[in-house]
Length: 75
Image (cartoon, rainbow, N blue to C red; front, side, top):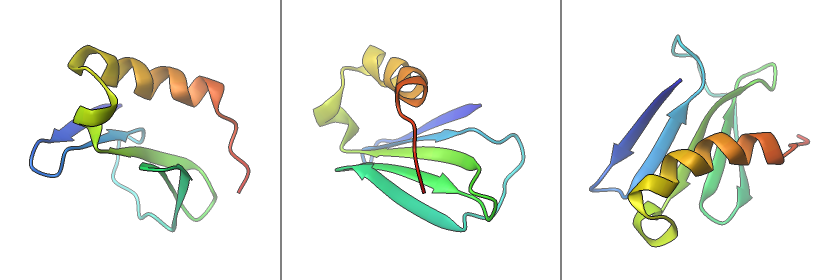
């Protein structure tokens, strides 16, 4: 897992795949929270927009980890 934050875009991206894979579909599960899926509907990454308005710095990582465990996604 790799986590990147783009300060200019104020976006956080959590890469769940070790190797880059092509995103086949993206699904916004709530406003500004986007899941990227491959062709087999496997979760590749999570993008969170407007991070500075949503979280304190320490909360961003905690969100990325716990939100996955709580959310079951049907596609």
